[in-house]
Image (cartoon, rainbow, N blue to C red; front, side, top):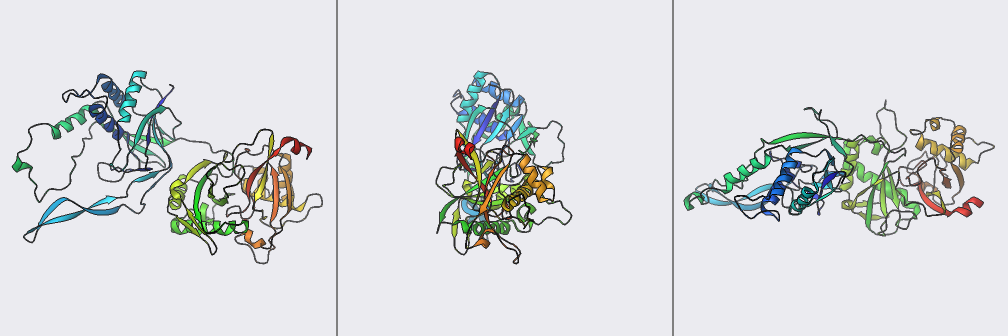
Length: 515
């Protein structure tokens, strides 16, 4: 085994725990994992059954190794607070009596709930160098005996796995000032097990109290003795610097549509995506990032692309989904920072229905998934050539001057490709449409545009000058190796709102060669 990890899988998708000061934890610290394993060693399948010496020899060796060897990395999934505005308070009777105005009253007490964290995947604590095989097997048994982490409302499945690629790595040079994206974890040091044993002995051992001392009083409150903190230290884990793939939208969020009042025709793709965009903007409020709204500071350099919203029918060829559900796709643009991404995910998690004048679509934010934008589509079938079709159509960003040797639709397609790829290919950032066409041709990109006849051309754009003529057209495109064959791309004036999504079409190789 080249490395090792402890994986925490929360079957309910939620972690709820609180730090020593009572504040909600976003994710459990490794010190909490260690405490849970200490209890497993004393009370679980590895325990000796002797209260005086509860730990087996191998369990002691495992715990000593964990004290001396904190994890070197973390793998943290996307996450969002269950209730971003603060925990809700529930009121219940917990055996609290108070004397008020000469009488003893049974009081209802409040407790913060719904202050957990919804996790979009499993948590991992990673070690580069695992212990001996015998200790790993014992650690597996200890992990299997852990029923929950934090509150009992967040059950967990702890398992030992091979090492995974961390999203955060330990920074031994970290200081007191927090940095963007970091996770600070309490970790045990040598002597932590003994410290926990002493705290337990102080509460559980000794002479039981007399009935008089143990009786209920009006000053009694629900109480848990605080754990000692002397044998804990803080480790800082910083995000791994990762190179985004050279595609316009490196990440994709998929939002399943579970119920609809009517099928959405191609002419309404834009309208339902506009409705989703308005719902997002409403939830984000004034803090909405410019990648969502398109409103950048006056002196800011505007990137080529923003967050794109598209509707993907269930029957789409090459779709990575097989459950028969339509989906909204949320395309995350190249260079979007983590805080803007987190705000977008938080907003999506609060949307349950997308409504237009004609359609009502119920969505399932709890089933939100993250995908690699460079490898979104299914691989091409053997002995085929992948060609792309713009769905439902393509609308150029502006009218272009005709060129005697280049078909007008191909020239407009090259212009749209330049608008999408100009941040990745500086040669496409030129303002001359003919030069853009020549660059795309030299890169091996083949274009084939054709007319798209519709009685509602205005349905394929969101906003446009009323005096402008809207001309949607069909486009077939072969990237010729210029982009990954599974990358997700959208082109045209409405590429951010439901139009111009390129769908894969795998044609037999011999037929393509004849063409």
